[in-house]
Image (cartoon, rainbow, N blue to C red; front, side):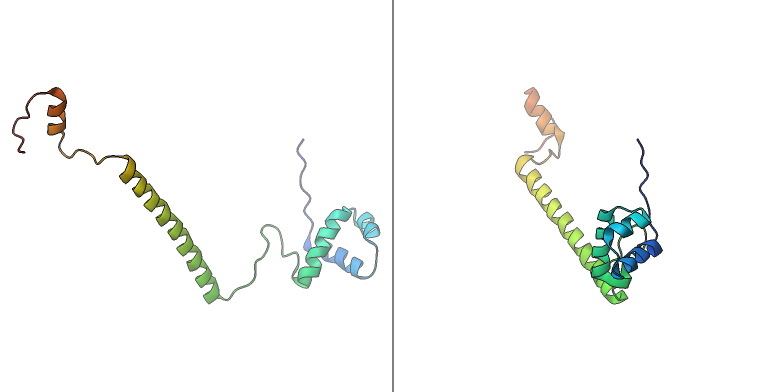
Amino acid sequence: MDLARSVYSRELKVSVMRAMDAGESGGRVARRFEISPKLIERWRAEWRARGEGSFPGTGRRAGPKLPPEERTVADLERKIGQLTLENDFLKKALQHFREHHPPAVVSGVAACAARSGKPAKGVRK
């Protein structure tokens, strides 16, 4: 069963919160607007925390507004953290290969001759 999620406008949410602030009971407001009382309580918590800045719109919640310089610094710090994680991973991988995998044979002539038991031609020792 495919149930679509209800989307409520900011104006509706603000109207509900103003009705609650005017002293109307939560149950009465829920019945009047045909909204779950639990949903109204969630909206009310956000309304108390952020006031008129509540309910910014659909999608992600708006984070704190930072000046462009601080936003740039935050982006750079995030990038430094990401690069640090990548470097740590690569260091661990390199250490693993050094410990568990012997270096590759540069010239296959000596290795092949050793396996076959025949003397290698033209190989200097």
